[in-house]
Picture (cartoon, one colour):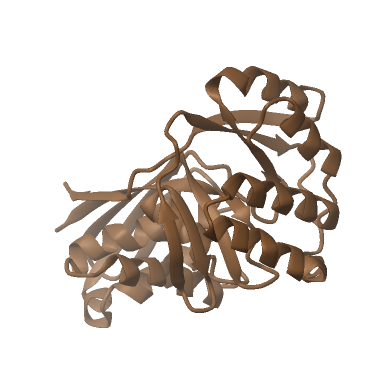
Length: 284
């Protein structure tokens, strides 16, 4: 019987992809570990401390990567350990599906390419309605680390580079989990398009802050938080994903001042370093 362990990291939004199917993201150090074990029998079992995890997403990802004949001959037991808060726009679903695909590929499809592994999770996300766009942008930063600028519709990465390593993300998780109506994002599609063009030219911080102002207005967040974060030294700040979390990218020396902006708000603040490391897998 085989056993593989995969580690994939989280990410935050630079440009939201919902309006135009074009997005940009950057990797952070919070991680997901997926342990996949095969046993005699059949079926898929999932163990996770997080009860709100989408088991449909995990099952569909396994079906996408494991050949049918192997699915019929093996019981696949999956254990997930995640440091990424679920449902806050910090790409937990992309990290989980990529980690599951990577660990399964190690056992059943050792020659699978990065793109095949990524697409297993992306396609599973679309089919289980976990994501509207399949979140190819999110999956790329979770899997490869660094900055990733993508066309989600074509499932293409148009630009990639490493993030300056001395930066961290100060992330605020509001107590209220209310998210705005995502269809509203299309109202400012030209603004998101301009932000994406900036990201493609490596002007990530401008792109991220424009994205932050636009998404916060449209998704019921407070845009003055974004400007306060910039004023206190953040290089960029934005709602991450579809919210409700807000992330600010900062240098070490400005971290404390940036955290203070969140201190008067109801919720939790976490700090994560940026991540440039690619996902890893090994057999045990």
